[in-house]
Length: 210
Image 1 (cartoon, rainbow, N blue to C red):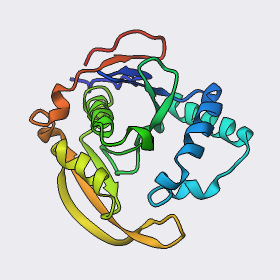
Image 2: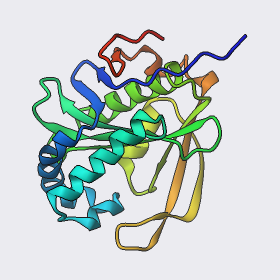
Image 3: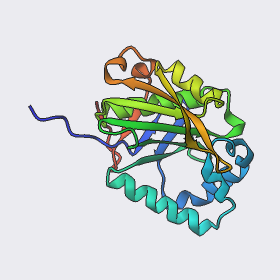
Image 4: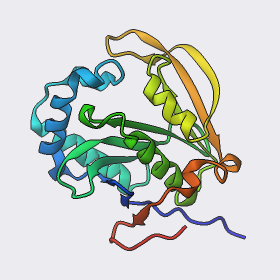
């Protein structure tokens, strides 16, 4: 029996969020969100050190994100409010976990932390990974000092596997330690992510069914 084909989800709607692939037209809103969150993100996101950068550079980056998405190489998403009027963060499923795996990343605007939005986003991404992209495992990598990120992994039933020394590029160029959390396909049904409420749509806006 042939393996089920993957179904990339271009747009997701959760209880409180609109999560969709980036479009180059989003560049001004992304620029505003990043500038608003520079110090909030600086300890954990090395790319913040590129800021400020010209708007044209962000447009080029979002074109690249969309191109990678369309080629099923890397799934990078914007997190919006339900109305689609404000960027609240970013997330993605990245093919950095080796064969059969993907790494999940996320960040949330400083004005919206401690509201469960990172957990809501990550649950939706886990659901997409297992039900639409047909992966065997999802990993979350984070600095051990990033307690909120580790808490998301714990809440969603990920297993803490290891802390690797001096592996994660830090914001000032140093190498930081890196925690690895993993959720395997067999562990997905008991995970809170399994029951996450999402609506998923393909590139043409058609509903997806797992």
